[in-house]
Amino acid sequence: MIKKAAFIYSLTMGLYVSLALALLAETWWLNPPPGSRLVITAIQLIPLTLPLYGLLKRNPRSAAWLCFILCFYFISGVLSVSAQPGSFHGWLTAGISCLLFSVSLLFIRWQSQLIKSQLMKVNQETG
Image 1: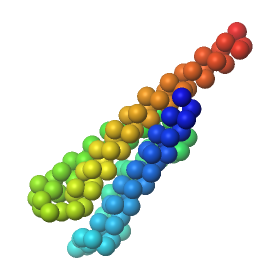
Image 2: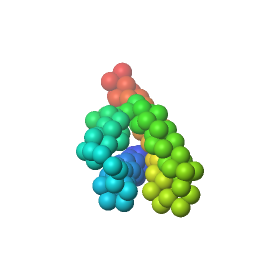
Image 3: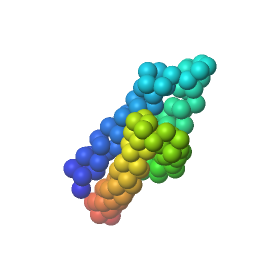
Protein backbone atom coordinates (compact mmCIF):
# COMPACT_ATOMS: atom_id res chain seq x y z
CA MET A 1 0.00 0.00 0.00
CA ILE A 2 2.87 2.38 0.79
CA LYS A 3 4.42 1.89 -2.66
CA LYS A 4 1.11 2.48 -4.44
CA ALA A 5 0.46 5.65 -2.46
CA ALA A 6 4.00 6.93 -3.05
CA PHE A 7 3.83 6.23 -6.78
CA ILE A 8 0.45 7.88 -7.27
CA TYR A 9 1.57 10.87 -5.18
CA SER A 10 4.61 11.40 -7.40
CA LEU A 11 2.41 11.06 -10.49
CA THR A 12 -0.06 13.58 -9.05
CA MET A 13 2.67 16.10 -8.34
CA GLY A 14 4.23 15.56 -11.76
CA LEU A 15 0.94 16.23 -13.53
CA TYR A 16 0.31 19.20 -11.23
CA VAL A 17 3.62 20.76 -12.28
CA SER A 18 2.91 19.87 -15.92
CA LEU A 19 -0.40 21.73 -15.83
CA ALA A 20 1.24 24.78 -14.27
CA LEU A 21 4.00 24.73 -16.89
CA ALA A 22 1.47 24.34 -19.72
CA LEU A 23 -0.43 27.37 -18.45
CA LEU A 24 2.78 29.38 -18.19
CA ALA A 25 3.93 28.34 -21.65
CA GLU A 26 0.62 29.31 -23.20
CA THR A 27 0.54 32.72 -21.54
CA TRP A 28 4.18 33.68 -22.05
CA TRP A 29 5.30 31.97 -25.28
CA LEU A 30 2.67 30.14 -27.33
CA ASN A 31 -0.23 32.59 -27.30
CA PRO A 32 0.69 35.80 -25.47
CA PRO A 33 -2.45 37.78 -24.66
CA PRO A 34 -2.77 41.50 -25.22
CA GLY A 35 -2.39 43.12 -21.84
CA SER A 36 -0.53 42.33 -18.71
CA ARG A 37 0.86 38.81 -18.85
CA LEU A 38 1.69 38.95 -15.16
CA VAL A 39 -1.93 39.59 -14.14
CA ILE A 40 -3.23 36.86 -16.46
CA THR A 41 -0.62 34.44 -15.13
CA ALA A 42 -1.68 35.23 -11.56
CA ILE A 43 -5.35 34.70 -12.44
CA GLN A 44 -4.48 31.33 -13.99
CA LEU A 45 -2.12 30.05 -11.31
CA ILE A 46 -3.48 31.34 -7.98
CA PRO A 47 -6.45 28.92 -7.91
CA LEU A 48 -4.09 26.06 -8.77
CA THR A 49 -1.75 26.96 -5.89
CA LEU A 50 -4.47 27.04 -3.21
CA PRO A 51 -4.29 23.30 -2.34
CA LEU A 52 -0.49 23.12 -2.82
CA TYR A 53 0.44 23.30 0.87
CA GLY A 54 -1.84 20.38 1.73
CA LEU A 55 -0.68 18.40 -1.29
CA LEU A 56 2.92 18.76 -0.18
CA LYS A 57 1.86 17.30 3.17
CA ARG A 58 0.06 14.47 1.30
CA ASN A 59 -3.34 15.47 2.62
CA PRO A 60 -6.17 13.67 0.78
CA ARG A 61 -8.56 16.53 1.51
CA SER A 62 -6.34 18.94 -0.41
CA ALA A 63 -6.37 16.55 -3.36
CA ALA A 64 -10.18 16.57 -3.19
CA TRP A 65 -10.15 20.36 -3.40
CA LEU A 66 -7.73 20.11 -6.30
CA CYS A 67 -10.28 17.96 -8.13
CA PHE A 68 -12.90 20.69 -7.75
CA ILE A 69 -10.48 23.36 -8.98
CA LEU A 70 -9.44 21.22 -11.96
CA CYS A 71 -12.96 21.39 -13.35
CA PHE A 72 -12.33 25.04 -14.30
CA TYR A 73 -9.11 24.19 -16.13
CA PHE A 74 -10.80 21.31 -17.95
CA ILE A 75 -13.67 23.57 -19.02
CA SER A 76 -11.17 26.20 -20.17
CA GLY A 77 -9.35 23.63 -22.29
CA VAL A 78 -12.57 22.30 -23.82
CA LEU A 79 -13.77 25.83 -24.63
CA SER A 80 -10.41 26.59 -26.23
CA VAL A 81 -10.64 23.47 -28.37
CA SER A 82 -14.23 24.22 -29.38
CA ALA A 83 -13.26 27.76 -30.44
CA GLN A 84 -10.09 26.65 -32.25
CA PRO A 85 -10.07 22.89 -32.96
CA GLY A 86 -6.43 23.00 -33.98
CA SER A 87 -5.42 24.58 -30.67
CA PHE A 88 -2.66 22.41 -29.23
CA HIS A 89 -2.80 24.22 -25.91
CA GLY A 90 -6.53 23.56 -25.48
CA TRP A 91 -6.03 19.84 -26.04
CA LEU A 92 -3.04 19.85 -23.69
CA THR A 93 -4.87 21.70 -20.92
CA ALA A 94 -7.96 19.52 -21.17
CA GLY A 95 -5.89 16.32 -21.32
CA ILE A 96 -3.62 17.13 -18.40
CA SER A 97 -6.60 18.33 -16.34
CA CYS A 98 -8.47 15.10 -17.02
CA LEU A 99 -5.45 12.95 -16.19
CA LEU A 100 -4.67 14.92 -13.05
CA PHE A 101 -8.30 14.63 -11.93
CA SER A 102 -8.24 10.84 -12.34
CA VAL A 103 -4.84 10.43 -10.69
CA SER A 104 -5.87 12.70 -7.82
CA LEU A 105 -8.90 10.52 -7.17
CA LEU A 106 -6.62 7.48 -6.93
CA PHE A 107 -4.32 9.42 -4.62
CA ILE A 108 -7.25 10.31 -2.36
CA ARG A 109 -8.34 6.69 -2.17
CA TRP A 110 -4.94 5.11 -1.61
CA GLN A 111 -3.61 7.77 0.74
CA SER A 112 -6.80 7.57 2.83
CA GLN A 113 -6.46 3.79 3.02
CA LEU A 114 -2.82 4.15 4.03
CA ILE A 115 -3.66 6.66 6.76
CA LYS A 116 -6.49 4.44 8.01
CA SER A 117 -4.25 1.36 8.13
CA GLN A 118 -1.53 3.29 9.97
CA LEU A 119 -4.07 4.54 12.52
CA MET A 120 -5.41 1.01 13.03
CA LYS A 121 -1.86 -0.25 13.52
CA VAL A 122 -1.15 2.44 16.13
CA ASN A 123 -4.43 1.68 17.91
CA GLN A 124 -3.62 -2.03 18.04
CA GLU A 125 -0.17 -1.34 19.48
CA THR A 126 -1.43 1.05 22.17
CA GLY A 127 -4.61 -0.60 23.14
